Length: 396
Image (cartoon, rainbow, N blue to C red; front, side, top):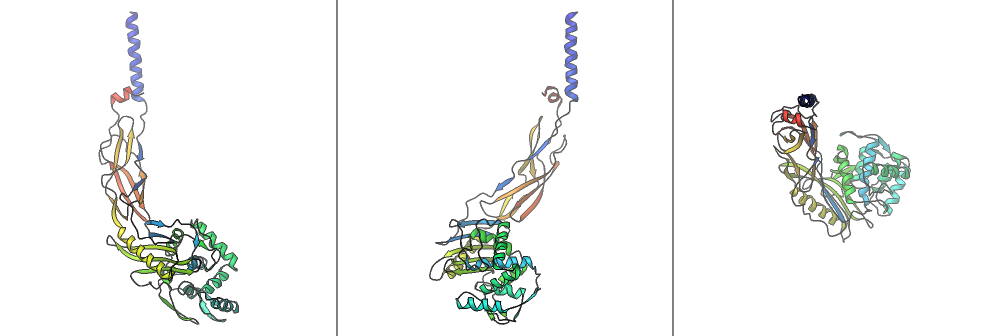
């Protein structure tokens, strides 16, 4: 009898434990990304870097392709006027077709011109009483690269040269230009320093402003007193060149930041290059030549690349009873890119409730590379079963 009672008790315990196991809550499936980044495979681009100085090249909206020369801060000459113009347009925004406020040149502005012209710096003739709009002043700053115009604009915007320089450095910090320091508005000072990488980043930001982009793309301008003046960037309007700025001083050597339209994989792209510190007999001409070589070479490296393939595992649904079940992209994603770039993958969705069949929706992935972005649906590659009886009874 005792034996039967013991057996009965054991059986009862087993039954109770079994019931408890069956009614215990089941863990919900979890959804997790396989990876948050995808690297474009292949050999890094080979580019025709200049023999000296430093350089960098990028494709607008995609990313930096490469840099050369150590990227230590060096004098940048009149390339500094890109920041000056950007601050003017930030303080007094213009739309295309607008001229902005009109400024009357003072005796001080005329004296600044006379002083700068005598020292053989780049200057634009002005006289007291002359009226120039904001747009004309920006043309005079960026096309014939008037150092006196930079000084006059700095006084107008900030009240003094020192206050304007503070604004320049604050903006540089805000843009993440970690190796850039401004000491003046024109770039004549050899204490105004930066790197090719930083100035390329700045130029790309400036070219997003339609008015800035329009002005630096003009080969010449007719001003009231100065008359017809020409762009130091003589390549503008030739071979797809659309800007941005030259610079040349004894301390800086030849400096050139360029943006040009090119065709890659049947699409228009804007390729940008910066070349600093050229010091031959004709430093600016060499900087321009080297910059254009970089633009052409970089454009040839841009291809349509499959970043995510249709059916590629991009995530997984995990359960204690079935392990990890792959989640795949329903379609592929192609971007303009080159080897070495990394695309990010962000997963937005939720694990389906089991049982769920193959093809059940999980949500979307958003793939980004530079300014390129695409959303793709994702689904289960295989069925997600419900927890079986054996697993429910034997789980710990």
